[in-house]
Length: 304
Ligand code: ING
Image (tube, rainbow, N blue to C red; front, side, top):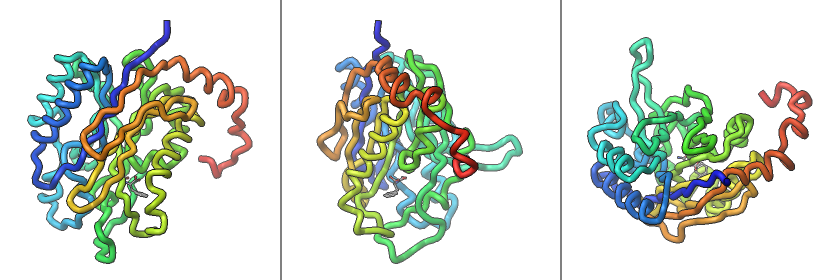
C-alpha cells in the first residue's frame, strides 16, 4: 500500500499594498475549495501570503512596518482559512510575517511558515534562516529588498515532522538557493519539502542574470529534491505586484528531480499532483544513500 498524498501548490497572483488580509484569505479559501474538489489533502501557499511583499520598500516608522506582521496565528483574519481547512479536512502551509516575544520578553520579527493539519492544529513552524537583500535604503535600486532590516534570521533550525503520513520539512524562498537547507532536511530523511517564495524577475545587483531567474528557481528546487531524495513543492506569489514583476514557476517536483506539475500563469492557480512518498526510497536507498556513500569525515570543518 503506497503512502500517497495529493498536493496542491496554490500560487497567488499579486497582492496589492491596499489589499486587505481578508481579501487575500478569501482568495486562498477559493483555491482551497478548488483543491478539495480535485482531491487535494495538503495546500501549499506562498511566502508572506497575507500581504504584499513589503520588504521592497524602505520604511523608518516601525509601526508602519509592524502593520505587515501577525502577532498571533491564527489571527482574526486567518481564522476563516483555518476553519475552511477543518471543514474540508485539508492541511496547509502558510507563509506570513511573525512578530513574537521571546522568553526574555523581547520582541522578535521573523519571516515564518507554518504547517497546519486537517484538524486545524499547527503541526510545525519554521522561521526563514537565509535572509537576502540588505539593511539600509539603497536608492540606486528600482526597488528595495530589506528582509535583513525587517526580520531576524530564524532560530528554530530546520524541523522535519511526521505528518499526513510522511516526513515533512519547510523552507522559505531564498533558503532554497542554499544546498545546506535541503541537506539539513535530507539528513533527517525528509520526504516532502514545502517552500513558498516571492522572487523578483529583476535582481538589481546582477541584472545580467534577470533572464535566468526562472531557470535558477527550478534549478535549485530540482537539485534539492534529487540530491536528498525528497518531493519538493515550490509556490510563488507571482505577477506584477506594485510595479515589481515576480516570477511564477510554481511546481511539484519528484525525488528524481522531475517536475510533475506546474502552473502556467502568473495568477491564482493550482498545480496538483498525487505524490507517492515511497518513491523517495528510489533515491535515498540508492544513489543518495547517505549511510553507504556520503563521507562527512572527509569534508572537514569547511562543511560545518
Ligand atoms: N526573494 C528572492 C529569492 O531568493 C533573490 C531574493 C532574488 C535572491 C533573485 C537572488 C536572486 O528568491 C526572497 N524573498 O528571498
